[in-house]
Structure formats: structure tokens, C-alpha cells
Amino acid sequence: MTKRSKNIFDPGSPEPFKLSRTRLERFLKCPCCFYLDRKLGVDQVKGPAFSLNSATDTLLKKEFDVCRAKGKPHPLMKKYKIDAVPFQHENMDVWRENFTGVQYLHEPTNLLVTGAVDDIWVDPKGKLLVVDYKSTSTTKEIDINDGTPWKEAYKRQMEIYQWLLEKNGFDVSATGYWVYVNADTGQARFDGKLVFEEQIIAHKGDRSWVEQAIVDAHTCLRKKKAPKPSKDCEWCTYRAAVRGVGVE
Image (cartoon, rainbow, N blue to C red):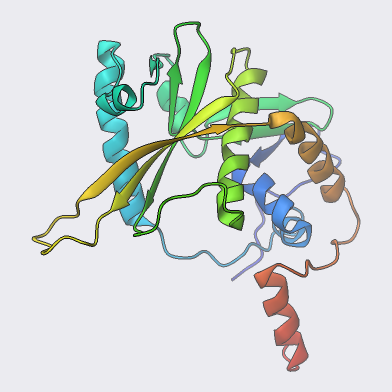
């Protein structure tokens, strides 16, 4: 891996610095890794792409887009008695793009905060409902409130999207939804296809923390030295272990 020369925070630059939802999440997990990445240009090693998850996301978007064009609810929305329809807006495709997404310039820090949504629904009162698609394969009941760190990250993800849309002038509901598809491994045969069980899980978000997190991330970037490694960060633990065996 080589040190990156682009997308480096420069405290003296007048240009807004892009801060994606994923990078803000990295800051919340480990300020040290965030600083190494956005200030020093040393990113974490990228893992393999989750192609199957991307495939289910794409197919779900196609399904909901059919309903969006008709102005009608998806059958799954009817099943869970959600009084809403997929939101129609000229920027919908832009908001879904990873490198654009919903954007808002946080003027106090000059950080351009971005986040790519999976979907947005709208209720009869005009309130927007943030929707995120998730894929899994488990025989256990999906409990989004079991305290698992990555499920807490899912909540923050949704709340950042809510904050971004609100900052763009929309009336945004505190309630958002996950459309979960769960691959059923209890089938007798594979036959070249996976069978998914679908469900919708609601979440009442609290986006009051987002702005302070942005301010804190900006403060971190302006430091002259990297923060101390985080005790719970696997990357920091790995780097410490490497140094411990004498490898620089």
C-alpha cells in the first residue's frame, strides 16, 4: 500500500472537504484510523466486495422503483401496514450514488457531508422515511436492538441520512425502516437459486448527535498529531502487534 496523495484534509484550504457517512462512522469507531486516513493518506486495507449484498440491493431498488413510477406502495409495505409510497424526486438517482449521495455543507467546519441512501418513502403528510436495504442469512430472529456493534452502526447510518435530508430542507420522520432479506438455508436443494424471506424492521432514530460528531471529526483533523490508538480497534491492535515483534 502506498500513501495516498488525494482526499487529504488541508486546514489551510478554502475548498470544502468531503466527509462521507462511512468516514464519519470510522471516526466514531477509531479517531486514530480516521486521522491516518483523511489527514495522512494511509487508509485501511480494503476487504473483498460484498457482491451478493450488492445484488440484492440492486434487485430491491428495481422492485421499489416500479412502485415509485406508479405512485403505489410495494406489497411488503402493505403487509406491514406502512402508510407510505416510494418517494418520487428528480435527484433520487443522485442520492443513491456512492460518490455523490445526499450532500450538505456544514459551514462551521467547511465539511461537505455526504451519504448515499438506498431508498426514501413518503407518508401522506409529506414526511420522508429513510429506508435501508440489508441482506443476511441466519436462522435466528433478527434483533436490531441486541447491542451488536455493527447493528448500532446501522442505526447511526440511518440517522445520518435523516440528518442530511433534514438539512436539505425536507420534513423527515424520526421513524425509518430496514428492508431485510434473509437467505433461507433450510431449503432441501440449492437448484441455482437462493430463497429469501423478507421483512421490514422499524427504527425511531435520534439524529441529535450528528452535528457534534461532525464538529469532533473536524477537530480531530486539525490536530498536529494522530490520536492515540483505540483499545477496541482491530487495526490499531494489529499495528501494535506488528511493532511488538520488531517489524516497523
